[in-house]
Length: 198
Image: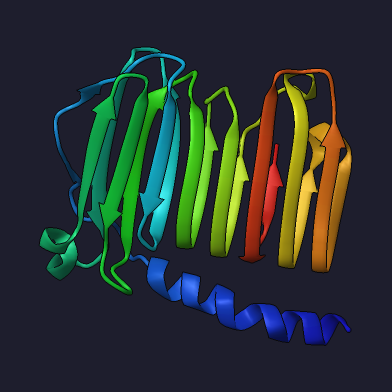
């Protein structure tokens, strides 16, 4: 059974690995910071790549990108649209681009992430989080469990590790459901990959 699980999980993760294979990033590129409301909501429509989302103390959005392949540098792009307390971020990256995007956001905001394939890391951001991804690994720093009202997560092929909520599971069709007395909700759905809530 373990061999079959590994076999079924491999193609999707191999795709993500191919997209993200790096030998050292080129100099990063980006655009000027955009002012954004602390406590707002951010929708992220993300192309296949590696993503690092980080909370910052000031109320601004900053996006930077780089690639391990110099020929791809001019083919990577991102844009941000801000309307009041809502922002939408788009990224563009060709297949197998070796791209990495670093996105800084206000440390208090709600996230709605749609990512096809790649790796996603979220650090130092307090708020509701909704993540949907096809293949790759997701790591979210959630902080203390008492901040959350509900946590719902599922992985078709892969592992779920959630120490703050005393849950861990792996294999095929894995899921996590947790309820508390906090105010935030976390939802994460992956087809193939590993999910870590830490």
